[in-house]
Image (cartoon, rainbow, N blue to C red; front, side, top):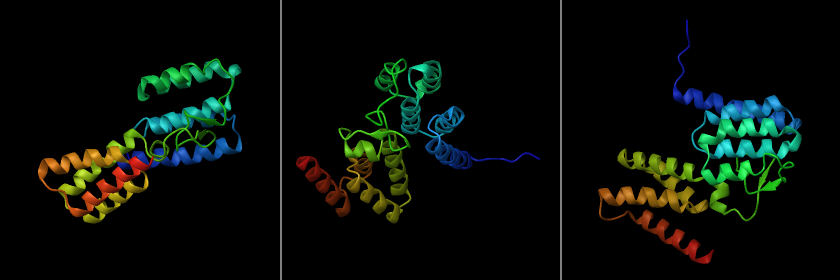
Length: 197
């Protein structure tokens, strides 16, 4: 008898595999099979950020002697990454290991750390995440899930996620000419934080 898995089950399994292999990588930075298993798990998750974070760890763990493996990992990930990120990784294939602090790291990285010149929003939430959160907020609007919408607004303020807020706000304004008061307040707070940045 075959077991039927849903897309959400597959995401849970991929996240579990990400955590399991991350523990192996932290214990042994040069565990090739753990890095590659983690990359395959990241490819099962939506968006580019998990893949980029895993690849940054791999490029940090291995130098020029593992350039063939680095090139193979990049080829697996290429279709999921932005063109400029692919070029950045390509420039590192034949280079020594990445520095522990690098702009290529994401919050999914366990060895590499994002450099301080990356914006706070980018460290906390990728563009892919912002779009997914906005889409979920639009669905929550349609279903009138106020608690979920409040959580979304809180996320936008704490992570300075202007993109997610803008996308959801635009959808809301398409349905109604006026925003609820809490949305106006969130808009003002985000504008103030941009002015202070």
